[in-house]
Image: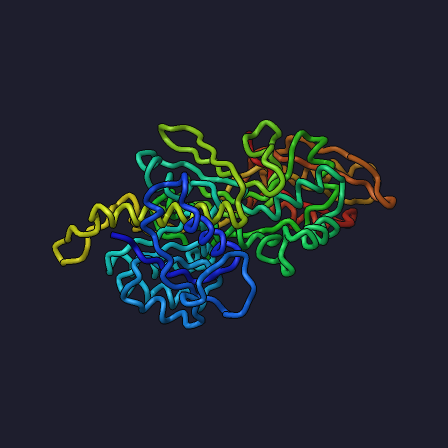
Length: 440
């Protein structure tokens, strides 16, 4: 008994998936039972990197999700629409889903997973986060006995590549971004990557799976790396840190059923496990009780890694269908799905406001070069309950004093209140930079 696959999209990831399915030798034997039945494309005449019979190519994507012969739909076309509508139609038709679409899952997971549960089908999404890094299924299965405390990671390869080159070459952000675009590491429109949106989609998915509840993507705070300049890279080095764009999700101590989920550039101590993850690599650090820390590392994008994750999900579904695991019925007659593979939320989480969170902070000020300025800054921070770890005049720049401050762990609301007062000081030229520092 074989299983017929409908593929939506034949771009980089789709072609990579086809290549794996067409070369099953020395791979899992179940691959030979997966047959590519139809492939949906935008253009029938476009030259492609893989050889696919013209008879199975179609521009009519609806015909694929409505085809009664197809068992599994693989969606690798990206974007919200028409991917959302096609997936919901496929689910209503009883087809299992494999998707690499992180934006769709982050924004519409509730609707998609609820439909999947109603119709008794699986929606697997290993390729949506971390490319070929196996992290989704381990969160759902291998680590499911743990009380997860936090998930954090470098989950966007483009920004990690840019920051790595800024460190190694002392270059400015704009110059490295332009070069990354020429080399194909960054899109022509890099907004989703460099402004943190892509990482926010991914940490929303990881948080929902790790903590077992709905996460409202629109409530996830998101800051990118456009404001990280050569000066911040240099000062981080002097202070014993590296700067990485992190997605962070952790339980909030302030309220039940509340998570702190955000994306922002962060100063990491060089001893931290994520500090030496460079170039286009991704890494995700999970901390739970009783397992402690577990880190997943690898290439976070590209045809090979992402297609590997897509095909692994296909094999998972094929294995379950092979042994008839979807044949058991619940009281209402719907199939009984494997609870370790199906995505079902147990609760809805609130997202803690940023001002209630605690962190260390780095700030760089340009001020008039006058006696007593450091004292004024220190007094202002103290008045707002912000304890300072260090405050030094680091340099002079264009006749102005450059003052660098690192705080102890403080409430973000208190720190921002202090900054608002400092902005009104007549000795201040500008607040050149503010970054969070991961506490040790």
